[in-house]
Image 1: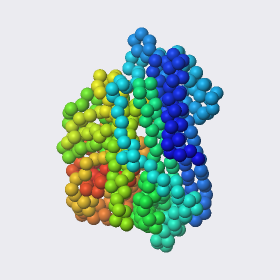
Image 2: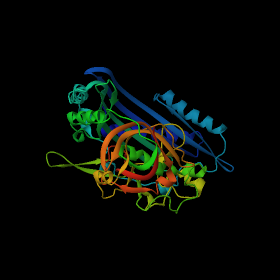
Image 3: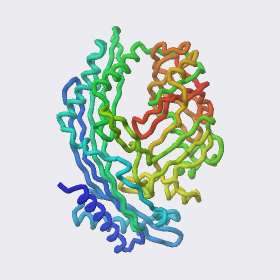
Image 4: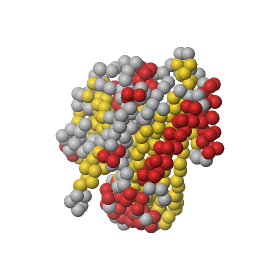
Length: 474
C-alpha cells in the first residue's frame, strides 16, 4: 500500500502530467482535478443488517482554455479510467470540445498572483482512526444506537432503522499557472430513526445523529438513540391549530435552513442574473441589526476529550483551497444587517466587475460553481428557554417540509411540524400546518437569537425567533 507521501506524489504528478499534455495539445491554460475516496455504509433495522456497502473510486477531471478574439473557448472532461489510453482520451476529448464551444469573455483561470497556500496539517481535516474502526464495530455502533432508542419507552415498537457511515477522501488540483494543492479529509457518523406509537395507533417518527472527522469525537450510541426516541415521543398526539399570526421560534436544525437563505440570496451568480432579492442591494440594510452572517472556510475547533487532552479538528466545510485553487477565507456576508460581501468565485466576480471572495466549488467536470465553507449566524445571549419563555402563544418549529422559498421575491411558505407554545411553555405537538411570510420582512423581524450555536455540520445557526408570521392550520 502506498504511503501518504508516495500517494501524494503520485496524484500531483498525475494531475501535472495531464496539464502538461493539454498544453502540448495547444491549450494556453489547463486545470486538472483529482478525487479519490473510500466509503462505508451500513443500514440496520430492528437489529438486522439490511444493507452494507463498501466502495472506492478514483477519477480525474480536466478543464482547458483556448484564446479567441473576444474571450476564450473552454471545455472540460472527466474520467475514472486512469490507464494511458483513458488519460489520452481525457485530454483529446477536452481539446476537441473546446474547438467547437462558444467564446466566453469571462472564462479563464485566476491571475497567477492570486494563488496562495495554507498549511494543510494545521487545518486538521484527516484522522486515521476513522479508517481504523473495524467493520464489526461500525455495525455494532448502529445496532446499539437503534437498541437504545427501541428500549427507551414501550411506545416505541418500530424503527426506520439506524446507520453508520464512514469515508476517507482525497482531492488534488494542479493548474498551468503554478498552483498545486492536495488534501485529505475523513468523516464518520451514525444515526437512529425510531417510530413511536400511541394508544390509538397513530405513529410519529424522530431521529438524531452524531458526526465527526475523528472517531474520538463521536457521541455515545446509547445517548444518540435516547435523544432520537425522545424526539419521536414528543410528537405523539400532534394536532392542528387555527390559522393566525404569531411568533415563530425556529429550533437550530430548522433555523439553519431559514438563515441559510441569506447566503443563497447573496450568491453572485443569482445577483448577476437578477434572480435574487439582494440584487442591487450591496452595502444596503437587508436584515435586522442583530443579524451577522459569516462564511468561513478556514475554521478549526478545539475539542476537550475525556482524558483531559485537546483535539484540534477542522470544520466540515473547512478546506485549504476553493474550487478555483485560491486559499479559503473568512467572509462576513451580512454585518449587522448590511449586505457587505457577495458569495463569488473568479468567473462570477469577473462578470460583476468585482473581486472573488474565494467561494468557488468544484466537481470533476464543468466550470466551478459557488459554494461556501462553514457558515453561521453570530449567536445572541438568550437561552432557548428564555426565547420560548417570552412567547405568550406561538409555534416552535422542529421540522420543515417542501421547497416553498422564492429567492427572487422573498416569498416563503413551508409545511412544518413542531410544538405549540402557550404562556412561555411547550404545550403540545402540532402538525399539518404551514408557516408563511416574506424573507425580506422575516430577516428584519428576528426578535431573538439564542446562545446555542453548535456545529453539527458545515452550517450552524442557534435558536431564532421571528415575529408576525402567518401560521395556517385548521
